[in-house]
Image (spheres, rainbow, N blue to C red):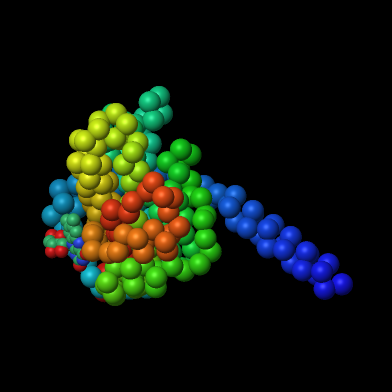
Length: 215
Ligand SMILES: Cc1cc2nc3c(=O)[nH]c(=O)nc-3n(C[C@H](O)[C@H](O)[C@H](O)COP(=O)(O)O)c2cc1C
């Protein structure tokens, strides 16, 4: 009897894990026009270190992710931010109270990877920078350097870092245009972030970007 119950429990765990692994969320369509000019966004952008706990709407999240890596050319798959050789070595993770998600530019979707609120672990991994726990969303940019290395060899390191900057700035400016704030965070323990987010071995985290309403 006990054995049967154990098998049933294991099956249930397996089913839940499979369902979660396959959970894909289609994001709302991003808008291509806004109320705030590009010049105003550039002027107002500031690294903010105090956030209210208010959640972002799905529309806001969709817009920020589109600005980061949305596909803007359906023929060639080019994206909002430039990429050396259009190789796109960057991955985007979204960390919220309801879990961890990976952004899928193709189809503008989110793939849910975990249902756990990993913001407290993210905070510890980033030397206790408290705003990471407060902000409703943190975006982690990670890179698979080998994708760019295969074509560009030793120059890949600088190319991937440059691309990360392009993506980050798009996020910052889009956040301002939506009445939100953000901050680029580079100070964290890489190995701890990799463990917390269960990143593949060939991916390295480069930036954490909390986004939310400033106080
Ligand atoms: C590569 C990089 C890493 C950064 N890392 C951190 C960080 O770990 N924590 C932090 O509070 N700010 C960080 N910042 C934000 C800078 O402190 C901030 O950009 C600078 O003070 C200028 O202010 P501004 O962004 O509001 O113009 C980082 C900025 C860059 C470009």
